[in-house]
Image (cartoon, rainbow, N blue to C red; front, side, top):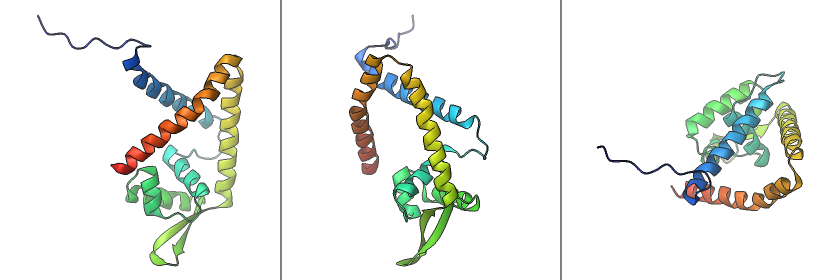
Length: 162
């Protein structure tokens, strides 16, 4: 008779919680992304492209190396994203006056418009579905936001350490 492995964790068991949470968050993000793709008139932006644009929006003038660190991507990957987004008219690459070899990134007006539209559509989509929940579920989601933000901070801090 073969030895048995560990019994699978059932839903609701404390050991299953981290996996359930991760699966739920990933599933929600995937569904939001898919729903936002429908009805687009412009070519869709990949997740990493949107993340880079949002980062440049939050930190105008950020350099490629700092953007790579913030997004946990290789510098050459961010460089490739920057080249594509600049070619598509969403990013401006300015020469850093302190280091002529480095670039500083700025959004174009087209990128600002695209991000505003994306943020509006995302808020509308999520808002419609949150509104369909009962008040207790809406309150539970509101109450979970601070803990989810702290989880994001600790994940970010651990990534910086490695």
